[in-house]
Image (tube, rainbow, N blue to C red; front, side, top):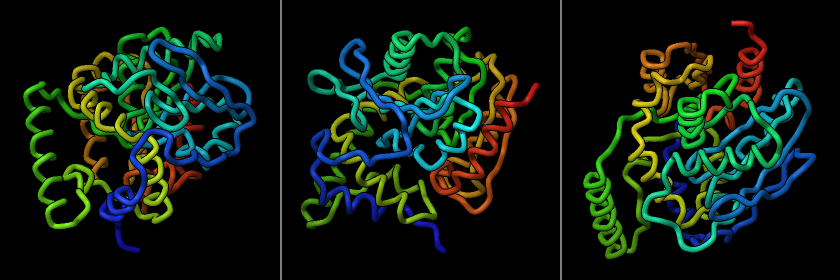
Length: 294
C-alpha cells in the first residue's frame, strides 16, 4: 500500500467547518470520562484500566480518541488516562486562542488536572505534540514522571518569534494563491508527514477540524519551545517509539543522542502515527518498557 501524505487530509479539512467543536469526537473503550477545570478552561479526559497511572497524549490537531485502539492493551497493566489537549477534542478553552499556546502552558494545565485527580506521579506516553509536552513535563517537573515514552515526535530546536511570523506570512501567501486558483490550501509542513492507513488520514481531518483555530497556536508553541534544549534534562527512563518510515523517524537519532537514559523501538510497516496504525505493536513495546527494571 503506498504511503499517503496529508493532501487528502487537507482537502477533507477544507470541506469541514473550522470552528472548534464542529465535529464529534468518536466514542472509545473508556470506562470513565470527565472534565477538569484548569486555568483558562476545562480539560476533557477518559480512563480505562487500573494500576499505575499512564497518561497518554495525542498529536497536534488530534484528540484523545487517537489512543482508542492501543488503550485496551495498555490497560492490561496501567490505569490509562487520555487527555484532550488545550483547544483540542472536547477540551474547552475560554476566550479566543492566543497567538502562541506555549508547550509550558499546556504542560502546566495537564499537571493541574492531575493534581485535581490526586495523581502525584505517573508514566507518560505522547505522540507528536503530546510527546513534546511529555518531554517538557519530565524535564521541568522530574518528580512527577516515572517513565516517558515519546511516540513519533518532532524533536527540533527553537524558532525565533520572527521566524514564526515569517512562516505565517508564507502560509498566508500560499493560502491566498490557492484561493485564487479555487484550490484547498495545503500546509507545506504537513505534506512531509505520512500514514499508511487511510482511516487514520480521515480521522486526522476530523480531529483537526475539531481543534479549529487552536491548532496553529499550538504548532507555534512547538516551534518556539525548542524541545532539544529540554531533552538533556530528562532524567526519567525514556523510550523512543518510531516507525520505519514517515518524517518522524529521523528524530529517533536526536533523542538517542540527547536524552541521558533513552532506548528506542522501531516498528515496521507503519508511518507517522504508529500508535494508530500499529496499536498492538506500539502497546506491546510500551508495556514492556514500563514493566522493565532498567
